[in-house]
Amino acid sequence: MNTAAKLSAYGVALALVAGGAWAAGTAVGPFAGAAGLPGGEDAGHGDAHSGTVAEAARTEEPGGLASSRGGYTLTPTTTTLTPGTTQPFSFRILGPDGAPVTGYDVEHEKRMHLIVVRRDTAGFQHVHPELGADGVWTVPLALPEAGSYRVFADFKPSGGTATTLGVDVAAAGDFRPVDHRPSRVANVDGYQVRLDGDLAPGRSSKVTLTVTKDGRDVTDLQPYLGAYGHLVALRGGDLAYLHVHPDGEPGDGRTAPGPGITFFAEVPSDGLYRLFLDFRHQGKVRTAEFTVATVTTPAQPPAREPGHGGHGGHG
Image 1 (tube, helix red, strand yellow):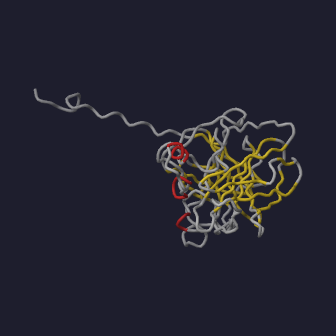
Image 2 (cartoon, helix red, strand yellow):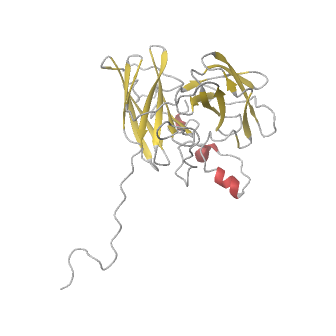
Image 3 (spheres, one colour):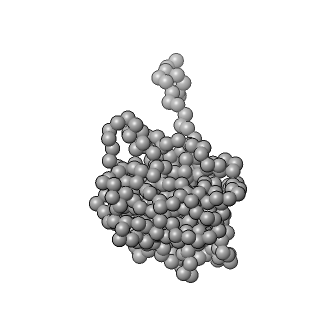
């Protein structure tokens, strides 16, 4: 993993459908001002902009909300899949010249990271497609149940800037959305993962995820994509996505392989977030899921006007 980027967002976006059934389509709206996500497309990824007002407004949006941005376009070969079966999912990234991109830089040990999640944030997957000589990426993909899914492609074209694009695919059938209630403790395959710390909009927030098994600390986590853990946060309403890396990395002489994995993330708005932690232990990658609401920093009291109140005076 690139040490300089260890606190930066992995591709960037945040996606959730907040409230109740987490239904698709309720927009929270674009990010505002400079309180963007660390390492996001607005903070280091960079795009080619026309300079128009419309384009300037778009640059404030996080990655993953559009299928085309900065001259690059995500084009899947199909947008419909059959739920409950494993089948190949293929796509291309078209460059500014309209031709498929075939040159990519390795980021976090892979040239392409694909995040797939249903619109109610169920069925989260983080997979890594293979690139063909013709510029077509392919990966076996199984959508467990019916519904509308968002696919995020996180990549860095050779000589270009890191970019995250998103597109919807559909799995036909009876869709029954899942209601995710607030939770800071996740249980998966006999492991328990606890999330400590709060997400506060507009500033860097420290969160620590602690992994235990059978009541004992797990102190021998294994590196996964150059880190001890990967965290994706999905925000309610606009299907934007944020992927951050932990503070520290394997082999840096200061980061222990568990039980705690610390992250620093900056979220731009109040709301409800879903967090997904990928970690590897005993040769298998597992995903722990959480649902967390932001906290708001108390406002500072207004300064006193000259001549009003204060201590002492002339009598």
